[in-house]
Image (cartoon, rainbow, N blue to C red):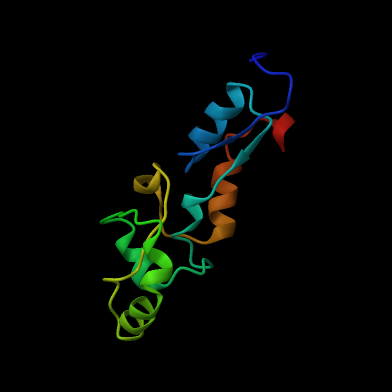
Length: 115
């Protein structure tokens, strides 16, 4: 704490309430969570990539546009073989539940000052 004079928003690898609490304890004034919401029922990720998220992550940043047609065709046929999954290092901690339930879980251990 006190290493910088600007407010810090923690991001990366935060997928549960313990991660939120740890980041706040280290001095963050806010938390940005992304990957944890990929498995939520309300996410725009289809069921195919959502299920595959737990099995395999491949990073091909330039391939997304190149395989768009293949992805659309494959997913329309129930295959996730061409579905890129961009996720952070905490993807193993993702769970399938509603976004509201996840948000409440993330806030569970959050100190009063951050709410």
